[in-house]
Image 1: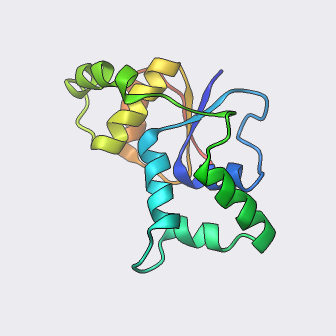
Image 2: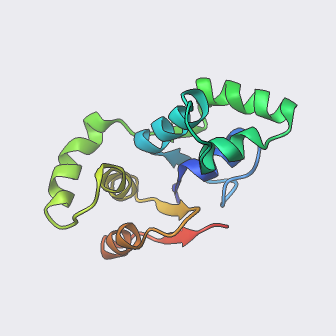
Length: 139
């Protein structure tokens, strides 16, 4: 079963950690990837959860993770909006989610993926369950 991980869990993977289910395909979304890139590469304001967790990595690990962030490893998939856009249009009729949430929902439905979140997101979680996708919080 494919697994879809959020941006905070992506930091763990880029630092060499294991995904929730180690031997199964791993994807993230374009928006989660962009949000992580913005937090790590473009952070000029106060530190947030993403930039802080990245900065807290040991120096050698952070360097390796930064290289992986700049060139996402092949084993981490990102589905194109070219593929997801029509499905996003259909799902938006049933679920009122922001741009990040609707992309997650569409990716999960398209990939038939289980979704792993590092923080609660009640509206997204409800939409995922409505679309018969497993969603799990990972501390």
